[in-house]
Amino acid sequence: MRVSIVGSGYVGTTTAACFADLGHDIVNVDIDQDIVDAINAGQSPIHEPGLDDLLDEHGSDALTATTDYADVRETDVTFLALPTPSRDDGSIDTSIIEAATETLGATLADKDDEHVVVTKSTVIPTTTTDTLAPILEDASRKTLGEDLHVAMNPEFLREGTAVEDFQHPDKLVFGTQDDTALDTLYDVFAPLIEQTDAPVVETDIAEAEMIKYANNAFLASKVSLINDLGNICKEFGVDAYEVADAIGLDDRIGERFLRSGVGWGGSCFPKDVNAIIAAAKNKGYTPALLEAAVAVNDTQPQRLLDLLNDYVDVAGERVAVLGLAFKPGTDDVRNSRAIEVIEGLQNRDATIVGYDPVATENMRERFPDIKYTSSAAAALKDAVGAVIVTDWDEFATLDEEFTTMREPVVVDGRRSITPTPDITYEGLTW
Ligand SMILES: NC(=O)c1ccc[n+]([C@@H]2O[C@H](COP(=O)([O-])OP(=O)(O)OC[C@H]3O[C@@H](n4cnc5c(N)ncnc54)[C@H](O)[C@@H]3O)[C@@H](O)[C@H]2O)c1
Ligand SMILES: O=c1ccn([C@@H]2O[C@H](COP(=O)(O)OP(=O)(O)O[C@H]3O[C@H](CO)[C@@H](O)[C@H](O)[C@H]3O)[C@@H](O)[C@H]2O)c(=O)[nH]1
Image (cartoon, rainbow, N blue to C red):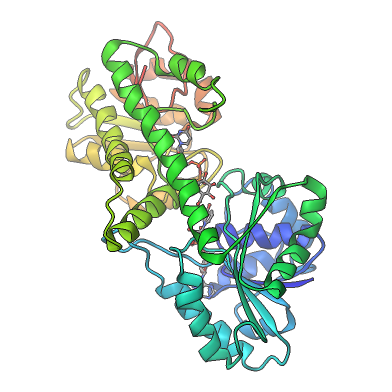
């Protein structure tokens, strides 16, 4: 099929490369010329395992990128993979997706055939039908349900494992309001459904939009619950990881997303939990449990720094921050817990030395004035304390490096390292 994807960030590029790999002809539209050039050169604009190989194979062949929306007219269906960021009050800002939708609609005005537009961005229930569809109808001068069709297909990929998640989905959700859109989604995903037997959830558009928020709100709350319990464990000298391993054996709980520590970050959980809270409040309902999940998450970085403070006064002293990305496997620092940790250390006048295998340049944009090193060993040397914020595998192999610290105090926010007798070690929840 001929498929276009508007927006070529984490979701758009991964989806484009994976669709091309399924045998479709893909046009990726983005306003950023550097991203477009990278894709056409067969290179990934983001750090995402497996994506370079797919782009190397399909870039500028089955997959082309462009800044020109006109190429969309040559395709049958367009997926919108545009940002839906938070406003200050937590609600989503739909201005970017609305503007792109208007440009798309105006472009489709010059297309004779019918067209299907699918929202892949995370949007509050009814956004597709009540906000985006009218914009498309006006700008394209097409008629919804006749020569214009809308759908919602939420994305569940995780950064760091995005390609793997796309290729082995737990489920596909098709939110539609007419058969043309539903049939089109089946046509696009047919090769994947055949390969994986992934269950397809057919539903209305608003349900599809809500499923995405419910999924993320549930997972974020699960992590906050294990963090809340983990904080209690710490008070009693109990190992929260042993407790989690045991409760995870109960099928009703499940073993995944029970890693307690410094909390959840990233471009999705914080944004989406706050957005659905704001949307619920706007309707007159206050979701107490979700508010508590955010509150617990907000306290974890502070608890990490308080533990460090129990051993060393960091004012004027060198402190190593190991891990800057919001999770391993990605260079994304959006809402990384490392941001709160660095700000907390700055408030305590520490001299901060950050290290991350791939996210340094992105964090340097946020904190240009702290020091960065090209290895964990270099960050640890002469430090009076170290905090572990991201669970990169390479931190598990650190050993002798800790002995080069001036005071070998290590506070682990991710259960990343095995303590040795040479260091003073504190786990956040164990
Ligand atoms: N990142 C994830 O892991 C993930 C997973 C599932 C869902 N989502 C959702 O998917 C959506 C996109 O997220 P993302 O992380 O890929 O965003 P992103 O910021 O990485 O990428 C968005 C892209 O859109 C481009 N863009 C902005 N305005 C444009 C316009 N008018 N026309 C064309 N391109 C334009 C930007 O240049 C950028 O490359 C969001 O709603 C997000 O919540 C993200
Ligand atoms: O047991 C756990 C699991 C995760 N995390 C943290 O939670 C955050 C999010 O992790 P993860 O969910 O693996 O990464 P994301 O890429 O943010 O993926 C989430 O957000 C995406 C965007 O909506 C969804 O598509 C995914 O399904 C959803 O898992 C990270 O800071 C993790 O360190 C924990 O602290 N403990």
